[in-house]
Length: 411
Image (cartoon, rainbow, N blue to C red; front, side):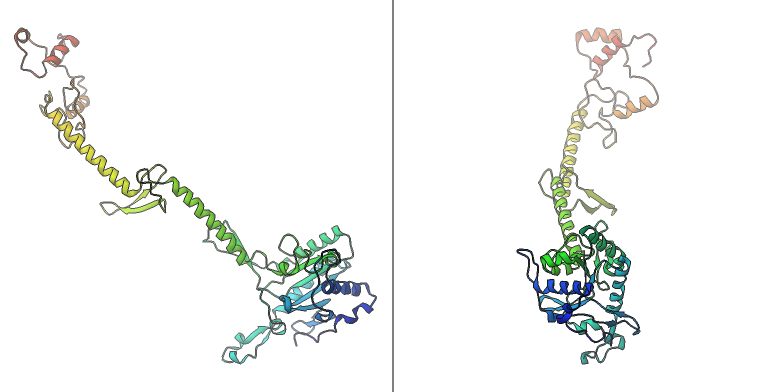
């Protein structure tokens, strides 16, 4: 047997005058009768719900675990609760050393004789003995253990509970899990399948408020809670899922707010994503990124097409206008330049322009200086008095003659 014969019920526990036994009796009375303070919650169960001096054999049969009390209250969802009463006569290390033995005890498995499992391997036909002894457990982890401390002042008892918690953390803390791919800032949760839930309180608080009052400190969880709330595993996967949902909700809200800043300047469309992939004419993958005050891809394409059409129309207008002007002095081609060239003028040439853009660039490359037109001859000047010369550069030639003296100038 993994578990020895149960001890007797607590009916006669009060007959002993031992201080520890009296503390156990007061603990049981607080559970059964409830708190003594006005408005305190009532108790639960009867004295027959308890057994004391119960011994459980550890594997090997030489060591034992003997809780001060074993409480069964399946009617409220607590199939079993092991209770340790500490009168502050032991060191915190000695008290904390009890909890690894509880975990060793709860880890023990026995053969499951369920006929439905007859075709399974022997290793798959085992079950934790405590689940078969006290069925109805719904929380992950092993049966809970309650630590009730007394025999000192409030500050000393608080420090004692914290010291025991620190020394026994390996038993109750649970295993930490994370999901690296989640955007969770390193957050995670604890699994309690191999953990012993430990709740702690003082006998004074328990007697004043009862087991359903806010007197229990669940190791690993801040604050004090009622017994049933304290038995709920803290920071478990469900709590993590809630936090993750809150983070995802916040991220979605921030994303929606950011997307609203990327509304298209033309059609007002709000994108679902910041970037949209598309393929260029040569098959290369390109990325179109939305920016505040920008446009969606459709409106961007429409705008580019419109600007391209307007540029073509403007170029055709400039070509027509430049073709009607005088030609380039040097190449005698259009003053706007060669059609389709990079230097072709996109607007009507200024009246004082004498060369096309290509000839201007060539002159600058050869460092020839500004173009100086030939000085009108005396014959041309006399003829101009009678009629306007048939020379499209006549006015510029006259002007150049005034700006650039004829002597020593190079044409």
